[in-house]
Image (cartoon, rainbow, N blue to C red):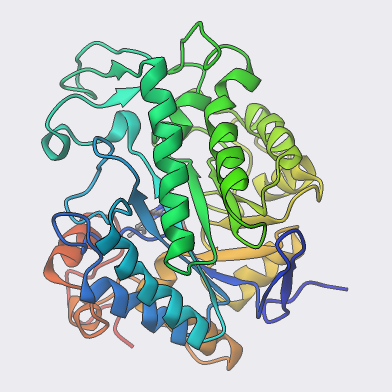
Length: 372
Ligand SMILES: Cc1cc2nc3c(=O)[nH]c(=O)nc-3n(C[C@H](O)[C@H](O)[C@H](O)COP(=O)(O)O)c2cc1C
């Protein structure tokens, strides 16, 4: 049977059902408190998305350990207060028949020195230069073990908050992705070298979570299929081999952050779409979620027809937290760039607008553009 956006989806290993195939992609909004506590504004915005019909919500990249912070208003899940804050997200999701996950994150080489009081950490040391003004410090073995523990403890807190699962952020040149990248990971111990060694950190986190939490708790992994933002070293062939390793672990889904779900494979013009390559590479061994230019019913339908089991909606959801309701009823969607006044009405704060405005094409300079 053809997969449809409004068709339910069963996470078989966890025994959890999604009411539809539409997922709110993790969206950093820069509106948590300075100490990482979730703010009223961010919880309200996520609640709005829960009411808006998404079957599943993935809350933004969330710190698990000091030292990996990338944004001033980045949330964290390291304290009782933060756990209590995210319990409200779980309740809002339940009340709307949706599942809510949180994305666990460490910025790695992309962590901001000014927000962390020093140089970022990564798999291997790097000298100071344009991209890394303070250089990068290599993690010690003991620090790697501490990091695994921090991810697992954050997952326990997510479970304690009543959330349905976690997504491990191993994409976009952040720490877990840095370990996967052979150009950045030059370690000669068991955490570097072969693919199995480079994936050891990610897999240790998955296993650590599985050892501590009930099987009903969802664990997904987000990957970049190709190099990201001009940082080389992540290749489709390697990432598909990694997908094979991860499919043997007890995970619930793989989430490929495609940038553009309908693009061709990098450096492989005319040889077919990235979506087809990812679909064929994953080969049904684990549910496949994709994000990237899922804007409306047509693009969601194309991605599902192309092999995705679930589609994650990013930019379009910023101006349409009720995206799924609109799409289900064939109502028009607001198009980006979104007017700042609209985003304010939807609950984005001034610091969120600052951040969203720094990304291309999201916030209209001219207030009339993009408003519906
Ligand atoms: C404002 C904004 C914030 C984002 N924050 C995150 C994040 O916290 N974690 C993540 O993995 N991706 C993040 N992304 C990437 C999105 O999840 C998504 O993959 C990307 O926007 C492509 O989908 P789209 O074409 O539907 O926007 C963000 C994107 C945007 C526009």
